[in-house]
Length: 205
Image 1 (cartoon, rainbow, N blue to C red):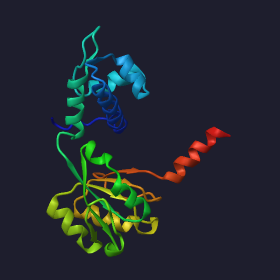
Image 2 (tube, rainbow, N blue to C red):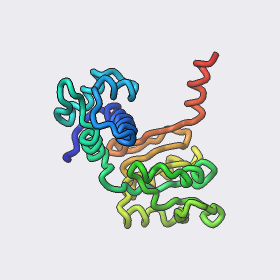
Image 3 (cartoon, rainbow, N blue to C red):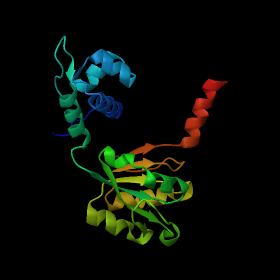
Image 4 (spheres, one colour):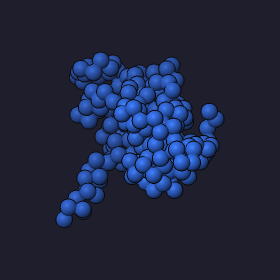
């Protein structure tokens, strides 16, 4: 399927719709209404229909969406029809925990290697090889990796980002507590756990 230029928030919601559709498939549900799917995803039905309209017409009036067909289409859009190779840079406490997470492969992503300044000191029971930083650029280029997870200290994040972008990385999931300066053609999703907790704390006063 050709790449369609759609809003970034709509892409994010596609992933949420896909999770909902997967649960429906697990429960052997064949069809779902836009109202039910929207409720499960936490959005309004009009927003759901608008997001899906970027990719064509789906569903039958009075019957709803075919769960299998819609899930397949969204999977193709998101690239889930093949395992997407991902690297992880920074094998500290958080990086090690992410290497042990088994959910990436289920969703179509394979962490193919991790990199650290002291690879021999970073034992991993995940089965994923941990390599030195000097091997980072050659590995990305040799294996044509386009996605990276960044779990390095804030002081090193921009330097590492520069290196991986120059090597060919096009998308970064950034856990380092800093804003990365990258070219316009590179997408960065940042996750600052402390900020997220701080935001939640407002609602429990």
